[in-house]
Length: 179
Image 1 (cartoon, rainbow, N blue to C red):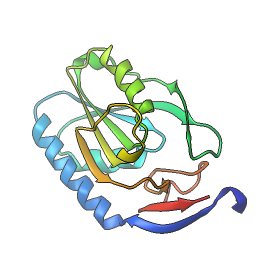
Image 2 (cartoon, one colour):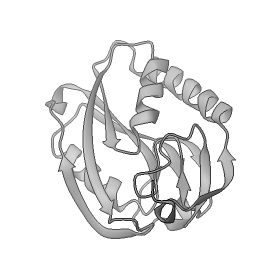
Image 3 (cartoon, helix red, strand yellow):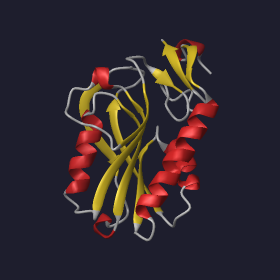
């Protein structure tokens, strides 16, 4: 592993226990809201895959899962390039489902805004957004999640699915990262 591309974890911002408790609570609430309804959880890859896995296990209702990949960061940059590219699309016809977008972090909001626009055009029964992290200081578009587990300051963070240049997704906590 190339240590020059790794950077370093400065400090833990959100502990593994705090994440687990928040995800459990959110999963239980979503299960109550959508009990008896057709639910499709949509993970925006790659950062949200761990959150999605934990969240769906906390929902004691039947639900389907699908994946979408949207890219707005180039290479080892910590800044969004402003261009959103859908690199993998859903396999399901979402018009038969209550869609819950499971997002890792809402930063500028540009990527998620584009994803929302695409999904709304496909006429889901309803569309809701749950995000693990919200970073409102960086928002450049008008966008709010329906459920936000944690609000963080303007730090670049890694862990629990979030990465820097492909590394650190496996950390069980959210940490501030320094290039």
